[in-house]
Length: 354
Image (cartoon, rainbow, N blue to C red; front, side, top):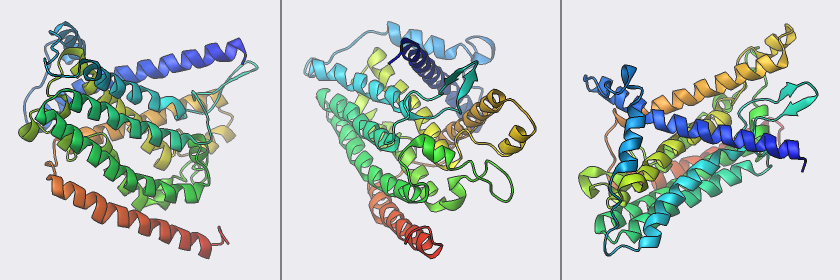
């Protein structure tokens, strides 16, 4: 591999990592401000103008808190758990196409760290590994509340991964590729005469709904936050963790929200495609400007789903454990299988498959 390509990929990885960390850091402030708005109170507004330095103050507090290792805990795994959760959260963004290629002189720069033809399988593999971080941390704590939270996390994750995978199969049938860039490019077609609006959400609304519910469950967000529900398990799998070990778990959750929002935007809402993009290109607008507009459109879609995470958390109450399992196994899995069957019949009747 050429040295210039290695430097280019290294810079892109750095930028993606920094953006993920900054978004995760400031999502803590956004969440607390929206929570205050929904509950008719002020929220954090003392650290810096409008409270924008509050995440830095929280970070300093976590870094300087006393490190506590429980006497009966498995000390190695107690540290490996949050580290693994953080690691798997940060590597998920490697296959996301953030925009079209940038052309600088005679050089074409791809805004994607790795365009592999099994991008979706990679995402599912990373999501599956994430549960090990919670399970190891909860078990190593030697605390019954932590262990209960870890078991809940594992069973919830496995249950909803199945429904999520089945929902994605319908998308794969329509697009015919496992590459995330290929799926995004397939949504650049026109709908009702508007270019760049051929989004999968209009053709697979049931798959989108199933995926959205499973996305909330995989991120352990309300109403699926049973692995860490304070009213039953103190703090669930991270009850015994303190300082930056707790910070890693909290940070991993917000990075997962960011990556999940990017993936659902790419799968169902066109990714970097936006309405009227072909008209802009036909009017002579430079390709790089269209790429930058597409990048902005992608982040707007991500911001919408991040807001949806916060909105739902402070609006809908938590499920009971039996309700959560019933929803996953008795409703979402059969619905996803029926959606695959209906998609196959429609594709056969319309001549897309023989």
